[in-house]
Image 1 (cartoon, rainbow, N blue to C red):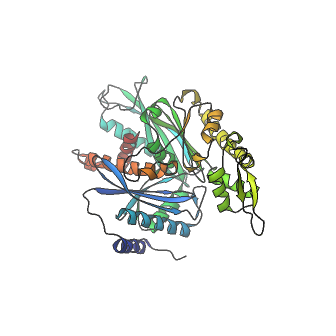
Image 2: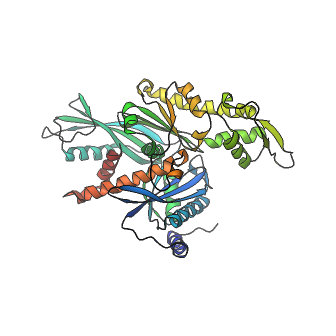
Image 3: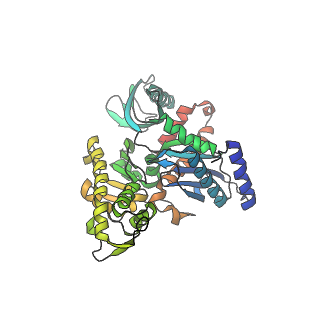
Length: 433
């Protein structure tokens, strides 16, 4: 497959925009997000002003070149990304110059960090917080094969006895900053960035995918009271735990919707496409959700004749994998020691969360309140966006909007034009959480 340079990819997309659509006249600026997943590459384009943003275009392509959230074929991934961007551009009648993207991998590592600082004037200033946040970022020790994704402030302890989230203006002699640190293999981060840039657009930022999904699906009350977000995609299941508004744990399991499809394909000796269709139309997470008299046809591979299968038999194939996935998630929750403090329970999202009965099975295994979350959005494309499979991409678009508005507000403050990138990134995540 011929590889397009960033310049030629850009020219090719501009040609399509000129010949297929007429660019809409608008005073609003545009933002874009791309979710590069195991089953699909999704691009959303939005336009925004100081009052909010609206989705104006969507492009989606079947993902080729990824496995379990990781790029395994750069050329095929570049082509898929290019096609998804072009589809979104034509739908929105807007050219995409840069995108916010996410990463999810079983090799992502998260940890918590504490930084201490003496307060010189007995009152916490913006400069104190900025200096502490910068110190947190620079104190992260990385191995040669790891790249820093995020250092997110989770709170500040004043005088060793008062924990707050917005310390500026408060009286204190010393302050401890608490942070959640996330790193990823450098090669995986570079591969994602390379595929996007070679498709002709810039990478505006990269964040952890469950953080993006949480932005789209969780309420402030849920984050305050304690909640587990479980984003079940095709190749991976991403987990983020929030308590008192802050993310305190993030991780990833290499099990997803494709794992169910694989089990069906092997057990029924059918093609991957047919197994996927069977899962979507007849799949249930537990035998108790299967209809005793419901049957469906299974096409074999090669010259094997079509045969009939009962839904109860299909359930016996899917149920062990469902239980295995949820038990793995439960082990992670229990290992944090926070299970009794997560009063908002568990929120499921992602395309595989739509498997019938999975939420009820999760309720039994977690012994917590469980709900399936849809992105909270009202506007154009609302019918499309209100689907768990689009939670990550819509969350990335929200993050892009939050970042743009934060930068505009910061630029309008006197003297802030010299603020460095690390401080801007830290402030951006404070605004989200």
